[in-house]
Image (cartoon, rainbow, N blue to C red; front, side):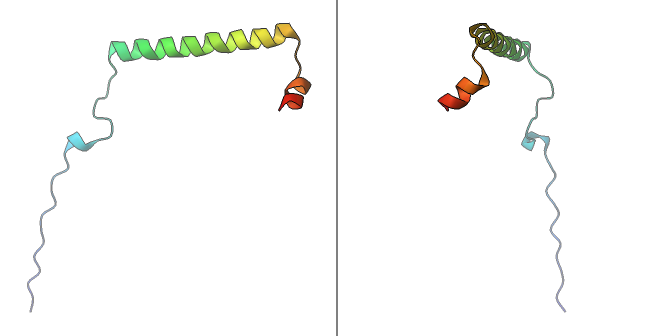
Length: 64
């Protein structure tokens, strides 16, 4: 009869996690806030420009 040897499983280490750091640095938060404010400002600028120029969706469909 063969003797079955069972190798022990290696312990799972926390260093292999996808996101080992659970909290964000203040600099990371500042970058995110500035990015979203910039995107919001550009979006409002483009939207206001389109509204003020009275360009309708027909122009965009015709240009596409």
